[in-house]
Image 1 (cartoon, one colour):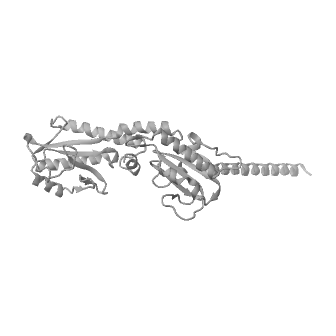
Image 2 (spheres, one colour; image 1 turned 135 degrees about the horizontal axis):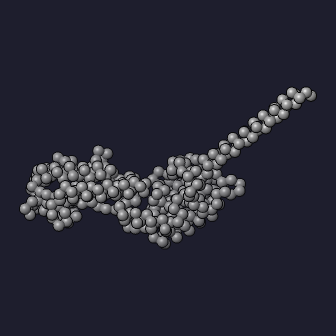
Length: 340
């Protein structure tokens, strides 16, 4: 073999080795990507999904997009403790889900599915259905305060019992430290849970002309809600604010023929676009002031000036921004459930 042939042979061997190394590297990269995409669905033979594991940091970031797009409708990672039980094999054993015990716990939901099918709620579930995944959630806080410690203990016990009954592995998708996370969320709720109230009273200590008042309510489009309050709704038919008498009760012209004042009230956590809704409420108040001899006052019946109103607007915007930072938008379905 000549020197040239020998050199060409060596070069060919080197090229082949480089191609093998390149393909091996691409295969490793593909497997890593595939592992990240399937993280919440697959448990490998070495048991990488450890029981009672709570995902944070790098693990959570790998599956963030998948997790957010695959939670059942109406379940929110920001306000719910969420446990996922993945079974070793599919089953029809609905009776082992302990549904009756879960129903007794407040704000608890259970969903089941097989593979990557759509989650099915167990509420009113009948017949036989095959499933290999169970998602169980409990709301951390409501307007009465954080979830009770006894309910936390019962929830954990039932999750563990369900996992054992159905031979599955447990993964906490959010808020595995339920008690501490509930306290933290409750502090946030206390910070933003405000009913913003503006008071309109007749001038010179008088009373409203009820006929004119009733006409304004009709012209401006106020409607009665189920509780009897006059509600003003936005373009999307979502309530923006309501009217009440000075004693916080609904306006009732039959039982209260001499209305001495009106409260314009906005439940900030439940109101979409708080700042814009506040400006809409101010416009409605100006309409009242135009047709009625009345003024906008504070709790001491002192007339509000422009600077005072701007300070109120600033507080409204501040609360709206605080909720956005927490990923619980004011007036959203998540906020409505949290502050119901």
